[in-house]
Image (cartoon, rainbow, N blue to C red):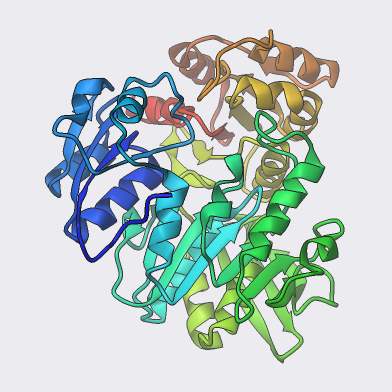
Length: 459
């Protein structure tokens, strides 16, 4: 594998530079004096920001974008061998790294690299940790899969030895990382276009945990079935969090305010109990905050600082994000695209003021929709009325004979009112005609469904 000498800047080209993670890594390299170029399918705020910082951005992907020839090409998991830039780089013998391999090499430059993994909750937990670190004056470098409100960005360049990032299991990306502190939030079936079954997924997370050095720490959710199998042969220290009182960090006396925001008592094996007040909804965020507080405790951040930071944390982009109101209809947007995430979000919504709960759901990828078809229907049944957008294909093409109408049939079999109006414009018009003052509307999914709420609020 090509090894970057960060003391000797070179020209690096990014295929897919507008991605939420790729753009942050490009920004970091620009700050370190590297020459950065890159391509993407379309212009975005992220590509514009990089161009302003000195990156050479090309819209559209073709072999000519590799002229002048870079010293290294970086690409994402979404890029395949038939991509013209990938093929041209291969033919020219230009060294290549995946996004994860580049991120792993960057992590080596820091004394305390922190990697947050899990099937769900990575972005929110990484954001909570980032907020605590910023409040503590730790001056961290941060890489998040969403926009952190404190910085207005998905990436922050710090000047300390602390680096915090999300660690995704898809294509085993996180196995290219070099963390000293690792967090495993949960382990469930997902990305079944890559993994064969849950056994293979668990093995991947075990291999991730095994990356931690003997002086490192693994913070793991003890409710993961058989979590001891993931930790039994590790050389690092293991810290547990969860609902169970046997955990190193647990909680009791959970309550919610009128907007579903949680408060609870933090119970620690090695410390006094603490009163925790959150400004994000749902029990899933209680668990996310437990992971963040566990991390804070392990690296010596004071209770007062950590609690103060969490008390001001109001979430990150596309995680139960309040978008606005239209004729008395509250519009929330959420990134949930897995049945477990949908269940958590709709449970949180149950505590939020509303007459009727509407969910506009955009399934993400044909593979995931087919794999979890009945699970999606059961999770969505917590809404009073479901509106389905077409499946967002992402990296896939429709070879499975699955559609949103297939999911609609499952929902109707559960006696859940469900409609598939068609385009985003059709969905917006359906909402205008059917939602009334006092209703709660959640746009949900990992694709571009957020545009529906924004379309409504601009009308």
